Amino acid sequence: MSNIEQTLSIIKPDAVERNLTEDIKKIFIKSNLKITNSKKIHISKEEAAEFYKVHQARPFYNDLCTYLSSGPIFVMILEGEGAVALNRKLMGATNPKDAEPNTIRKLYGISIDKNSAHGSDSVENAKIEINFFFKD
Ligand code: CDP
Ligand code: MG
Image 1 (cartoon, rainbow, N blue to C red):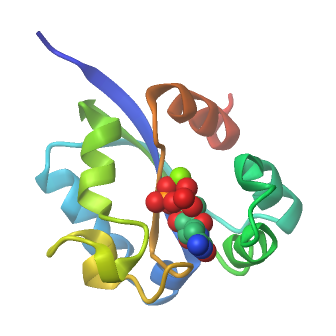
Image 2 (cartoon, rainbow, N blue to C red):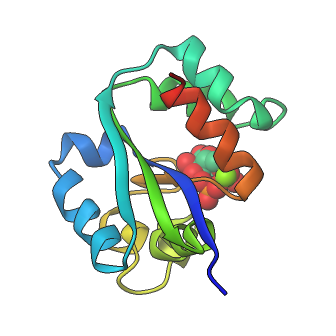
């Protein structure tokens, strides 16, 4: 039985700035995730605040929104078998220090905030996040 899903991936400013976009895209493609849509954009702090509003009560919220809007990001729709969980696995733990070897955050993350990548955490949130960046 197949379980083709879509999920949203963001390459965060720290990684775009270090020209890691192509290396990170290769990690997804090698794992059979298709990039069905993508764009490089620079969002405002207000847009970052809307995107991350689930975290609005957290102490790191303001810094997180400042950071995501601090430079260009590369957003992608990833599609494939179990894409939501697979993307989370390929990214690794939120804190690069705790991430498994060869995950994006272990390879490229600088710190818990500059952790190079975002990935939707559920099919439901993936739909909301894809619509946020790619509504037509
Ligand atoms: O990104 P992920 O789903 O792994 O983690 P999250 O708990 O949804 O947090 C969203 C983002 O907030 C993380 O990716 C971190 O960049 C940032 N964060 C932070 O700066 N400090 C924390 N203590 C926790 C998260
Ligand atoms: Mg999250």
